[in-house]
Every structure is written in structure tokens, then in C-alpha cells.
Length: 330
Image 1 (tube, rainbow, N blue to C red):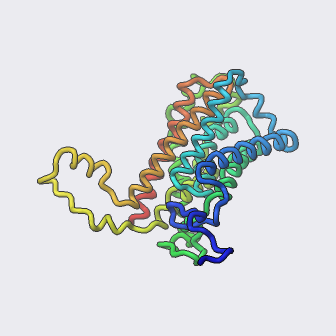
Image 2 (tube, rainbow, N blue to C red):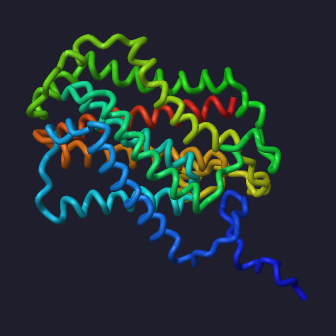
Image 3 (cartoon, one colour):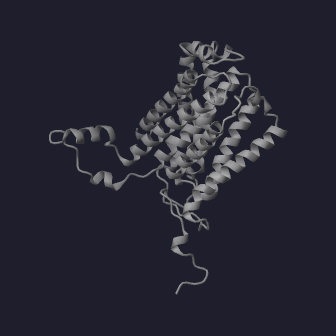
């Protein structure tokens, strides 16, 4: 007979990352609504405090007035979608914080560089978005083993790589350089004309004419580190699926057209599929969030302008994912 202090197996929550969390007192169907509610309440409270005491009111000078219910509802709904993507993809708090930085920085970067929004305002706003996504996930879900490589409570593949400081620096610099090259190339070719054509009310366009590439890359190191944590770390710290070795070998001589297409498009190992899925997720979330928070919330921003600006960051995400996939497989 179990003792009075024993925990029922049904009370223990085990996630796809393989780590059982502490016994949860929140019923399963209520966990995601709880997550969304915590995030929204925390976000509202922190932005109210910041507006009153930390002087981030200059965002209001360039913000579009949202007078329709569907405009406000769309932004709140998108917030829930972001959290839902992370929740049902079995991401942890570090994943969500990294994804938030990568997807929320582009419109804030635009405001800082071309609308003279103070960098402190940008950093506070970004920090609030990251905190309000990280904390609810951290409360309701444990970290992935790959995000706790120094813990010896679980076995982590490639632990030495994940804890090696030079590797961390180099992979972060690699991602920062990729983002920097794409942004620098855009500045040097089409972006200046695009900004003037589709953004009304720009305060300063000089950043598009005289970008210093080394300083541009250095300023993007936080982006590089976030990309490393979201893409490289989970991929490097994941185990191979034994079923991959048991799968029948592909024979192009006997395969049908459908089997050939399926093999060429999705015939990868489970580990490779994971980084492909994360890269596509990063591209979609970054693209949609950048477009939404540029076109809907910035006064004078046109649809084509927002699409062009978001395309820069989507392309950067795709190239970074491919680069990390190659580096981790070497």
C-alpha cells in the first residue's frame, strides 16, 4: 500500500524533453491558459511600471493609435500564438527568451536606428518581452538538458562542446556575422530607397548610408548568442534516434515518385529534422512578428515597407539555421 506521502504517477508531468517536472497541481487543460494569463498580466504590469518610472514614453511619439477592437485583439492574439508555438513545440524558458529576442528585436532596431528612439527604451522593452515569456515557462516547465549542460543530474550529449567557452564565443560570433552581412548588404543595395519609399516620418536615415560592418556585427552579438541557444544548443545536445539506424535504406531504383520526393524533402534523421523545424519556426515567428509590429504599430509604416524589413531578418534566420546545421554535423 502506498504511503500517505507518496505522489501519484498521474500527478507527475513528463515533457517531451524527457525530464519530469515537479508534481503539478494545475490540471492539464488549464496549464496553457494559465501560461497566457501570467504572461499578459506580467507584461501589462512591467510596461506600466516602465512607462511611469523608467521613461520609455518616447515610443508613444511614433506609435500608431489603435482605435479598433480587432487591432488590439490581433496583438493580444498574436501574443497567445507565440506562447502556443513554444508550449506545443515543447520549448523551455531559454528557448522562449531566445526566440523572443530574435523576433522582437527587428521592429525595435528599426525604431532606434531610423526613428531616434533611445537605446535604453529599446533595451527595456525587449527585456520586458523576454522576461514575460521566460518566467511563465520557467514556472510551468523544466529546462531542456542541453540548456543545463553543467548539471550532472542528467546525461547531456556533447557536454564538453556546450560548456566550452571558445565554442560559445565562436558560434555566437558566427550567427552575429551572418545577421550583420545580410543587414549590411541590404544597407549597401536596396534598403535606403525602400525605407524612404515606404516609411513616412523617418527621423534619421544616416544609419543606412554609413554602416560600419565591424561595429554592426558587435552590436548583433546578443542576437548571435540567442540564435545559438535556440538553434545550435538543442541540436548539439540532443541524442540520435535509434530508429534512424533501423529505417530501411532508400533505393532510388525501386522507389516511387512519392517516396523519392518524401526522401529528398524530409528523409533526414530526427536530429536534423529538429533543427530544420526550429529554423522554420524562427523564420515564421520573426517574419510575422516583425511585419505585425512594424505595419500595425508604427505610424507611417506601409505594408510593403514592413514586408521588406521583415524579409531581412527572415533570410538571416534561414542562413543561420543552415550554418549551425552544417557546423554541428562536422
